[in-house]
Amino acid sequence: MTEHDLLDKAIRRVPDFPKPGVLFYDITGVLVNPSVFKYCIDQISDVCRKESIDAIAGIESRGFLFAAPVAERLGIPLILVRKKGKLPGKTLSCKYALEYGTAEIEVHCEDVSAGQRVLVIDDLIATGGTLKAAKTLLEQGGAHVIGYAGVIGLPFLNYKEVLDPLPVTTLIDYSGE
Image 1 (cartoon, one colour):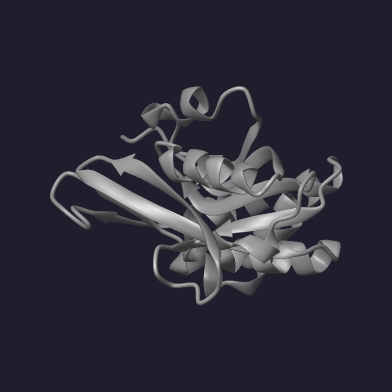
Image 2 (cartoon, rainbow, N blue to C red; image 1 turned 60 degrees about the vertical axis):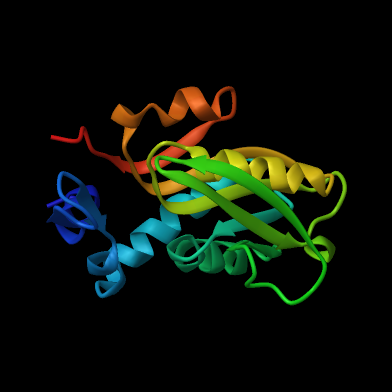
């Protein structure tokens, strides 16, 4: 069995969560399997090494689990993209649309530098809305987002069109069936 197959096997599918009709892709099976988790960190780190990156931005909360070890491995800063109200200092913020309503994310102003080249990481890329909002937020601070990475991709939700023209790397894609 390949490492990719082991990753697929480790991702739990939970039907009708958090609401009926939704198939939830649960990465906790990856986290309890050190070799599969290492595979994910290795693969994302390899993507980063091919680019000139100054920092990694991780999306709350499961994106932190992948972004932090990648940033540490590469020896570059980790920028935390948090839900509104979670950061104590002066922040930059960005509101964005959800399927039913809006959300808002923030970063500490002092964590983002002008001209900084940033790769944004999340555990799962679905519609791309949160990642696009993170790009807007980081650009408010003068950073330059150069791409996105995630463990799981759901291309049937058209995230590539939302995030175009920046590159999106995922380790495994699901068709929604």
